[in-house]
Image (cartoon, rainbow over all chains, first blue to last red; front, side):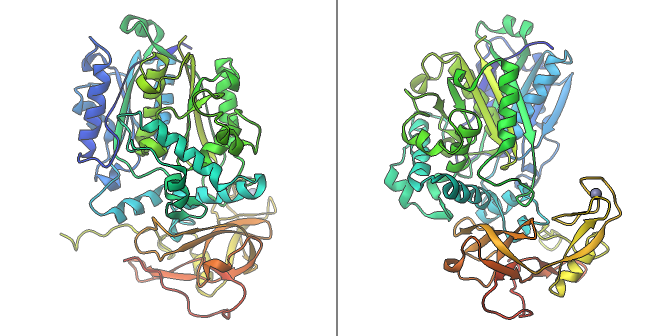
Length: 387
Length: 158
Ligand SMILES: [Zn+2]
């Protein structure tokens, strides 16, 4: 297999945007090209787009050709959409990676985009129910917050994880996103504000949840040979892993406080990269809810099982700690435009590993990890490196 | 225009014209909880299947489950409830003879919900499908209070 690298990256602003689906993806695509001088749309051989809800939120399917045409790209080797709920963006990166590694294409754009906010917000909330099992779970009104609330409840019961520890995840990530001009939230939050915020699904409060956000992100992947022609600072994909143990809440085993699929995906990614958890300098993990980041510390091997709460309280997941987790502000600070999230994490890895992350630069960043879940039993991990 | 559009709602179509699981819904209308059983694996499934995920057999039997179980985990959602559903929504994972069943508790005081408490089947009507079949979903309620067979709660979306 050939080595593959990121050579370009760009974002739209994330937030409640006065912009439509196609406009958001155009912004991110344009920003991505702006990061790669001399590369033009006709140089791109493939287009992969991660998008979850365009059929419901924009009455639009047939997304990859739409995105290609919008950006003046005429794919000659690969054109596809990836839909894997909240992991759609990273699923797209893996797809493009495999295509290039196999020699079927040399240079591919992966774009993630979501327009979630609608004039009728009830509809936006209802749409999120399409990502869970409709016949047996969404029919009760289930969306993501209550599922992760079950994980929080059991983690608190089993490991004495506290509300204050959950709140610390939110404070950290909002502090990080206050240094990110693309983030949905840029004002930070205090611990008091988090623990006094509205209850969404017990025990998860408003600021322990990621918001409903519009946004888009794009990266360009190239074979090592092509990458070195394009840039002096390619960011290599060193490893990747994905595991799906179950789709519905009913089917997950053994409980909701342990996520063995995540451990498996991370283990495969570490093995492929030839590294261990303590080699990771920063990680963009899927903090859709505060409990998800706490469990991520444990399943990624940053701390022993059950010690995720103390890990954040002691500052070990922050600057000057063991590993900087969510330097861009994560899903809680940046927002979570489903299909865009995984690609936006790759954009952050690109900037961090090239030393271009500005105020939130992680010192001596050599290895970065990104992680998406699309449910408690579905995980995907990428490892990026300077070499 | 507006008459032409019919939004897909979050409730499954339940008649035999639309699903091979119609017997499940038919039983649910008479307050019975069925699921499928694979004789080859001696395995009960949840949710009901048309193909056994263990051996891929499609010769499955319908069996009746006890209508009572215990709460393994729960959460109460106050905010961000989808339109048409009442607030708060009480979600629970209920254990019935080793099966984990994700469900919603109805006719229940949120303050009374605890892990380990007994709940019983209490199906809810969720509105007719386009063929006029009254659809039900397998909700539960706390076992104490309210006799079996009480008329179900309506949660027809707006
Ligand atoms: Zn079987």
